[in-house]
Length: 325
Image (cartoon, rainbow, N blue to C red):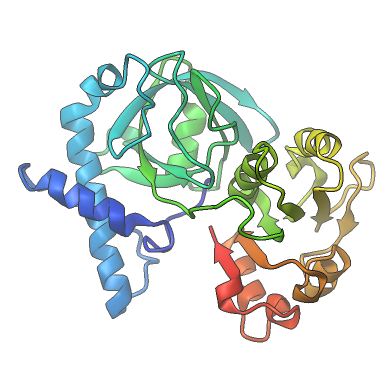
């Protein structure tokens, strides 16, 4: 998922920072700057330190160990099965629409899977323009965790976005360093029915979760996905979602909400934004048996949906019923 780092705690960086601190205990220190949007509070100060540790650790690890990262995971060991910085080579870059590219990276061993679990993500560590300080952004793979030899991402280019612009400029053969981010630990059948609410490129963790559930023969969880986008051109996974609906009849319900529809698309959708009425019409309500909500989208969308008197509260959900990726 290509989103700015707004909350290191939200991205699960505290455990990562602790490991990074241990890594740095025997290394020289460096200075790192962080996005100014991180709020100043006692809690966020801890998050700020955690993110700083990650940034510094990423910089040191990149400059000192990137050359050996590929060899370290050769021989069939999944590269992201444990903590560590891994440098991957870009295999292909394909434009999907005006601002999204499908990037495929080769894994060190073509016979190995990534080692990632459902709902896990990777932190991309780059140095745009040859800068000394790293740029960090989280991305969620869109291919199956057990796929061998490669890992795929959908990367949206944001205006002025250093990381996304840099990744869009890469050519096959270029390399990027990644580190695993701890994510939500999904347990098969922990809920009978879940709701996935996505906005824009926030679809990627939701798509990863629903694929993980549906492809697990021991998981019978039902899923309702409500995905809000700007235009029909942003619905990049329609074919994949339709195929999953056919393969798992009665298990997956999908509703698209388009704020600026063109009117000439074959994709079935409704006009507007994700509201309580839209969610209720799609069957996403506590009274309908949807027990937990997984939410991923732009910060403004998430804030509106989880507000005290917001749409999700109207539908019977409390904070403990909502997980934000």
